[in-house]
Image (cartoon, rainbow, N blue to C red):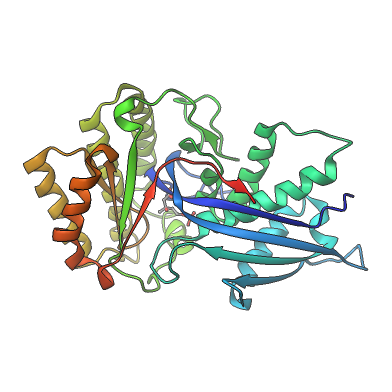
Length: 353
Ligand code: PMV
């Protein structure tokens, strides 16, 4: 066992272009369909994990404490405990140490932005890093093996987090469009992306910063008996295959319509679940309509997408930054809660600090 007892990683959040919504039955957090995302470099979590050897090396449960932005947060511990219990069969050291986990996000708390992808991404990288250090001497992991391990661990914390460990777009879930893709972990989309889709950014327009009425975990569960689940999974397969082609060819019109359709399908699945529910708000719709109108007038390369919430992600080509920022400031801010929006570049790998 190495003397290596503290590790710190910064990991970006991500936004899916083709959405993961629904889990396979059997296995833990295996996706019912493939998804792909862009990492949001400037919206990230930084996590420090410090470990101390336990006297009882055969402890039956995991020992941890969790701090968010410097404050103890016992309410987060059950979710992290479950994550550690899940990785313990692959990493026996989990039960041999007490874990002090300190995390912080660089975006304001309570913006409704899903912090779990960045948070579990950073946490998974820390644990994979400990394991790599402990194995050194007996086994050497390539960078690819390290990232795959981190991606498996991240998946066991929060499915979408497994795509955050790569700077390149992350593909997660079996698809014939990408032979390396698997349900167990995400892999990077290493093909050359067309220049017209290689310089984009995201402005997250904060519409609602409250707690969601239905969590993602509950939302995934509602797909089990959903009347449209099978066709949604087939559609996601088709959309992923098509999107990979679009990214190589640089078909902007195809990109915009596919990404927006994916966002609306995700919410259509929520609206047609049993019980049905609605996470978008009137201002979500107002912003979407403003974006459609502006695009019709100007032809700017921009598209909206949504995650499981009311906030709108406005994806745009950075060559149009000034015009898009001006559009946001003058026409979209009135629909944002406290006039708040957050900007991020796309791409960029996690960093070890
Ligand atoms: O990772 P989870 O279980 O919180 O699922 C989130 C799924 C979406 O954000 C709605 C879509 C996606 O692929 O990221």
